[in-house]
Image (cartoon, rainbow, N blue to C red):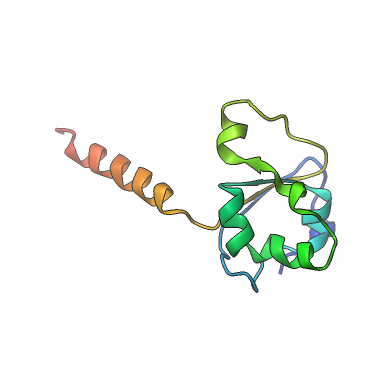
Length: 110
């Protein structure tokens, strides 16, 4: 597990490797002081141990990661203070987007 105290406030951390409720990549220090962005709150609340563990310990509330990726991308949300943390649990639509892009690229005449 990566120690959050090593992360500067202006850093961005992308945590995409863990998607089980009991597993995590980063510690509660980073999650508690960061601005956390997720793909979807419902998926994060079901699968993201990086968030569920500090949530169950009372270190954060579920409002701490209220920012969905789509809202951030379209400019509907302004990032807060502390490090930015994107926690992914790997959603199927992301795989579909990448597969479609790979297919379009392979279908282009060369």
